[in-house]
Length: 114
Length: 110
Image 1 (cartoon, each protein chain N blue to C red):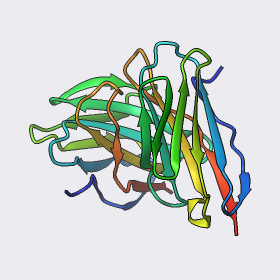
Image 2 (spheres, rainbow over the protein chains, first blue to last red):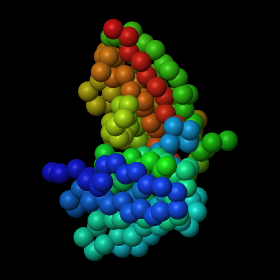
Image 3 (tube, rainbow over the protein chains, first blue to last red):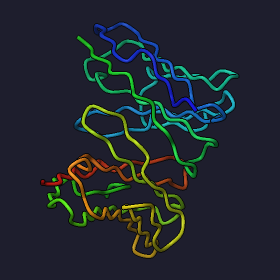
Image 4 (tube, rainbow over the protein chains, first blue to last red):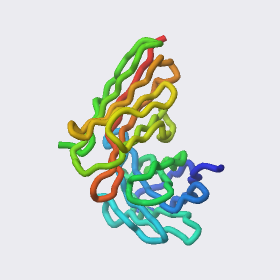
């Protein structure tokens, strides 16, 4: 069974631009969560999607948004990029939402803001 | 108080020894507990999960949960240099989120 697939693996952007990251979950997994990982803050929860609906969100500004499609694939968008958005963005999928199911991570997208 | 706390380490153990990694959490309503391993430059990999008080064993790994004291531990028996990584504890909360600790860096010395 294929794992969680994230694209692209690396991105370099400049301040003020926007970026879209993509995530394909494990087949049969309907919940997709996004995380930001930085050396200083660790893994920070961004949001969780299930059945094309945002089920939960973390404490990030509105510049961070996401969506989920009917095939459970998800995208995350960050607008008006800031230097502090440089991070590893991880997507994780699980069978069901709510935090009771094990989550499986993709390899991540490393975003660098110049 | 942080929702999930781990000692950042590094925790150094000799090869063949038992490594003990600990995690405390603040939400008494938490029901699910997960351990992930993350090698440098890689994404987190699920090792174990536990839902009930007591011990759960899987190969060289044992997860221990004590809900009354609000801690969860991971024991690694016969530690190998390949076990050197950062170990992340994750806990679900009553708001249905996964909250991660900042991780404990483990170094197994050959």
